[in-house]
Structures are given as C-alpha cells and as structure tokens.
Amino acid sequence: MSTATQNQNMQHTEDPSGRLSTASCDDGGEVRPFTSDPSLPGLSFGRVLVSEFAKLRAMRSTLWLSITTVVLTGLMVTMMLYSFAWMLSEQSDFIDTMGRDAAATELLNQNLLSGMFFAFILIGCIGVLSVTSEFGSGSIRSTMAAVPRRLTLVAAKAAALSLFAAALGLVLILGITLAASLFAARHDLSVDFGDVQVWQMLGANLLMIVAVALMGLGLGLILRSSAGAIVVLAVLLFVAPMAMDIITTFVEDNPAIDLIRNWQFGSLLDAARDFGEMSMMGDSVGRLEAGVGVAGWLVVSLGLGGLLFRRRDV
Amino acid sequence: MITAESLTKNYGAKTAVDDISFTAAPGRVTGFLGPNGAGKSTTMRMAVGLDTPTRGGITVNGRRFAEHTAPLREVGAVLDAGATHPGRTARGHLRILAATHGIPKARVDEVIGMTGLDQVAAKRIKGFSLGMNQRLGIAAALLGDPATLIFDEPVNGLDPEGVRWVRRLTRRLADEGRTVFLSSHLMAEMAQTADHVIVLGRGRIIADLPIQELIDGDGEARTLVRSEEAAELARALSADGVTLTSRDAESFEVTGMDPRAIGRAALRAGLPLHELTPLHSSLEDSYMQLTEDSVEYRSGGVDAVTQEGARR
Image 1: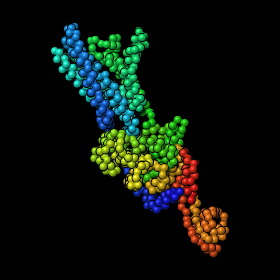
Image 2: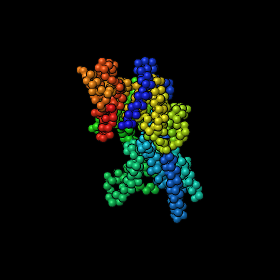
Image 3: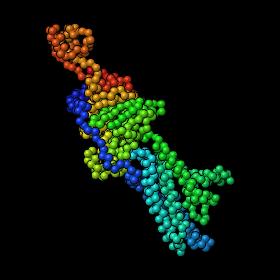
Image 4: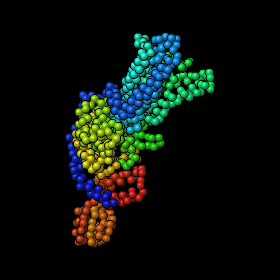
C-alpha cells in the first residue's frame, strides 16, 4: 500500500508538465499533421526479393545445411564411382554392349541419380526453414509489418528460395559432372557434351532440386512448424516410396497401388531426371509426365500454403 | 491517424474486441489503456493487418494498412519485443526490413544511433535483454520515418532511463505532428505520456477522453477536514447535499461543499480548523472505477487491498 501512495505522489509532482503539453496540443491545434514523403521509394516485388534473399543467406541453418549437402553428395558420388570401378573391372563387356558414348552418359546419369539422394531432403529442409524459422522466432510479424501484402511476400520467398536452390544445385551438378568426367577419362571414356540429352539431363536435375526446395516451402507454409514439415517431407521423399515398394512385393498388379507408387512425389522426382538405358524403375512414368506430375504436386502444396498464409492470423 | 469503425474480432466463441469505434488523431499521444486481456494488442494487430477483423475495419492514414504503397513509411509498429530472428544481428535485422522499401543503409545506422544500440548493433539478437529488444523494435518502427506509430507496451522491460527515453521520444514524435498510439496497463505511465486516452475493458471502449478529464473525472471533489472539535464542526457543516464521512476522532471528509465554504462555516461556528485539504482523485482511482467491472483476471486478495488503497 505504501508503494501505491508513493506512486501517486510521484505522479502528482510530475503532472504539471504533462498538463501543459496536453493543453497546447488539444486546444492550440498548431501542430501540423506529419505526412510521409511520397517521392521516396515504396514496396516492390524486387525489393522484397532482395530482402528475402538476404534473409536466406543470413540464416546459419542455411549455411550448415548447404555444407552438409555438398559433403554428403561428395560421399555418395565417391561410393558410386567405386562401385563403377568394380563393375568395369569385373564386367569388361559392359562398355562393348552399351557403346562407349552411352556408357559414359549412363555413368553420369547414375552418379546424378544416386549422388542427389541426401541433397534432396537437405535442400527441402532449407525450403521448410526459410518460412518456419520466421514463424518459430516470431520474426514473421516484423516481416509482415513491413510487407503486409501476403501473396507478394510468398512469391518473393519462393523466388529467393528458387535462386538459392538453383545456385546450390549448380555447384552440386557441376561437381558431380566434373567427378564423373574425370573418372570416365581414366577408363578411356568421355561424356559427349555435344549431345543434347546430356544437357537435358543436367537441366532436369537442376529443376528437381528447385522443385524439392519449393515443396519444402509449401509444406512449411501449410504446417508452420519446422519439425512437422520436415517429417512430412521425409515421408514424401523416403518413407512413402519405400513403403510402396514393400507393398508392391506383396500385392502385384493392383492398378490403384501402381498409380500411387508411380505418382507419389518421391518417385516422380527420380523419374523426371532418369535418362538411363537401364532404368531400375521398370514401368514407371515417362520423364515429361513425371515433370508435369512434380509441377502438380508443387501447385497443390504452394497453392494451399499460399491460400492458408493469406487467410490466417499471424 | 488511426480510425476504427465497428471493429470486432472473435476467436472462436470468445469476443476479443467487441464493436469498437475510435480515432487516434495526429499531433498527440493517444493512450490505449486497459487490463490484461482487454483487447488492446488484438486491436493493434488488426491495425497492421496481422489479424483480420471479424467485422468492421481499421484504417491507418485513411487506408487499410496493406493498401499503402509504402507501409513502413506510413506506420511503424512495435507489437512484441520478440519479433526478430535470434540468429541475426541487430543491424542485419534492420537492413533486411529496410531493403523491402529501398531504405538506405545510412538510415539504418541513424535509427541504431537514435535508439542507443550502437554498441550491440553487430551482435546477434540471441543475447539481447528484453530492454534491448524493445529498443530494437522501436528502431525498426522508426526506419521508415512514418506518420503513425503504434507501440504495444513499449516500456516493458526497460530500465528507468529507458522509460524516460520512451516518454520523451513519444512526446517528440507527437509534437512533430505524428500519430502516436501507445498501449499500457500501467496508469501512472499513461498519466505522464498520453494526451488523450481510450480505456478498453473486455473488448469494449469504457472511456475515450482527454487524460485530464480522466484524472479530474470522478465526480465530486472531496475535502479533508481536521479539527479537535470534529464532532461539533461536523454538526455545523450538516446541510442538504453535503456528505460527511468520518475518518478518525479528529478528521472527516466532506463532499458537496468547497473548502472556502467550509472555512467560513468554521469561522461562523467559532471552531478551530487544523487542516483543510482538497483531495484529488488519482488517475489510478479513476481507472480502477472505470474498469472495476471489466477486469478479466481478478486476483482476490491483492485486488481488494489495491482498491482499498486507491480509495484513500
């Protein structure tokens, strides 16, 4: 009670100054309303994109995930090349039956397919964290106090993430291509870069890396939780394809199960970039169809994510 | 200028903000006062588009916040001190926000200086105290040199120097002709900062008036009278419309009669007078009376004590 009295006393001693200013403001009206300078730059997609890209780069998680991606991809490619070396020494007729050019292309193709095994989930995680880290930390509220147009914000996030994923993907693909070419040269093979198919193969791999990052973003927007979105991503990439493979060993020739098996996200991601002569997937979907399928998955996840992001309170 | 019209927000079955209309005018500090859970933060969040109103609307400088071409230059808001990414540096956080509006890096350093964050600008936000976070929030709000500022409980976690700084800053911003909309549940703070006050309780506006009216507001003036002949004097003062409340053997309170009249009556009756004190009710008294029925989380014992203290 004594503190309450003290507070009141303090209030009374400091009151007069407050009263004076109150009077001047309420009665005088001499204060001209402040208006912001309309000639100064405002919000634009380009500026938000710059901001989002800076955000992505400033995140520690992005840095560590990127480094881990490069290291794990390096390990996968090294393993792949060892198994090729073994195959070439044991099955010397491999090159003769395939033809030298096809064998070199196949070598690159297999390295890209397998090398990217961990890269996909890690780059997907970068996509997830690019939005869930903002929800987790609360910084999304600062962001939206600057950029209240929510769909512009989602579009800028997607564009910044695509650029980042493409840059990281380029590093991976160039690295794998270089490793595979050097390996091939030691076995008197050379990848034919005059072949359009080789470039298509590299391009398809790059596109799928961007796709998996965007899938992560979509899941992050829908679930708003890092853990939740990463678990769903892991299910889509690893668990579901494995589960469907197991199921098909028990249930053969079931059209519904084959449909799910072939059109699930993880399978499409591989089918869209498989340029091999000796495809392991058997009766899987064609490359172009798979690409369209991946685009469909992205439309659903980003569309739903964007819609929810626009409607929900933050 | 902030204008709310029939603004309503429901969270499921609970009505957080219930059909409120008000204006926060430029050139003055408008205080937004109310107990915890009264709907202050929800109203402010709707002003910057974080929450969507269930009904009605709220505009800032004549438009919905999201419709402005340069939102940061119209409204600077500090809604909660933790709205930052802990891994970023203070300067990094501000630069990222500035980039969205093409605000130059020099302005970022300027607001860092204005908020006294120079020493920690290169440090990661993770290690910041609540007070430093508040300063960073205010720095972000000032980035765009906006016409309207919205501060939700800005003095939370600040040390006395910081509290004084916020008080002066809000005063200066209002004097420059900006709209300053400031929430608090501390009445004493409001008395020193706000020119005008909107009192909210359970999502409804209880009062919307100049701060001085709120302080003066509680009806009749009381006078404390002390005399060794208290009983005699009380009898002499008895009249229609005069209420006498006994305090102790030598003193009592009078309402319905001003101190001059009491003094003259005492002289006529020839009774000694030791004290004659006009009693001002504090802002706290007025506020307690206003919100008495609309406190959401009442704490039995402590509350009873406070009200007793407030009545004295």
